[in-house]
Length: 379
Image (cartoon, rainbow, N blue to C red):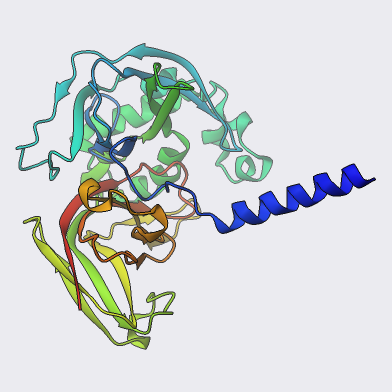
């Protein structure tokens, strides 16, 4: 009994210690001794069979030889079931990468990052051959969805549907009538298929590491002339830090309810954020365009943008300082916890803007990454 009590006390003590101690790293903070992915950018976001995609993979932290230390694979045949589970049927190695140069003005990345680009031709047959859509495609749908289909459409095979879509897209450059466009919208959502990039870091210790990025391929861009929605990559117009009175403010989603000042972080790398006690700070990105889309039930809705934030501090400034005194950023609300040690002044922010829309089946991912650097001035 005494031994049990002793073990229990030890367990409680260890739990208490663990609860008080912060983790030495975070998903948001990128340190120099960690190899971290920032983003895989797919251009264009809304690609069709036969198009060529430019994939840019951007990393930060520990340096790697991206076309040697990492193994790159692409799969055009991925099964995605109704529950969102995915299975790669087959894949091939990606070769002949083009390494992105840091001086490329279109890249928006500094030497603090590493980037590699691949030009990937999408097979014309990707939808025809994708195992995610069976030949008897209508039989794989839930009964309610299957019952809502016109009988003539439900009776057609996958091959017949793809032939129909392909034929319409080539006729008058896809400029179909409004009635045909309305008929096509849900069909194009049913006949959207996934492709996947798999990046392996086989020599990572103690365990190998695999990064997966999935995109969805559909025919929508072939019918742009008919007004069928196409998902564009959101372009960041500005990166801003909001300064709000009160150190305990948890959200500024409703900006009309708070008084704030704003600091625009530009691309010069020399932006300055004044830091004062008694204020809360929030990091955000404003992007455009706001695309509209059509849901599975025929409603036209605007997309929403979501921001993911990562950052890096200067290793010379943080040397010897406990990580609990570092900066941190809450990705739920964008709130910045400023460094507790005022010797920390330099920062680099990376912000990824994602677009999303509910009730659109397998919407392609529109995403963009920007970098902003500068320093903090404590008042």
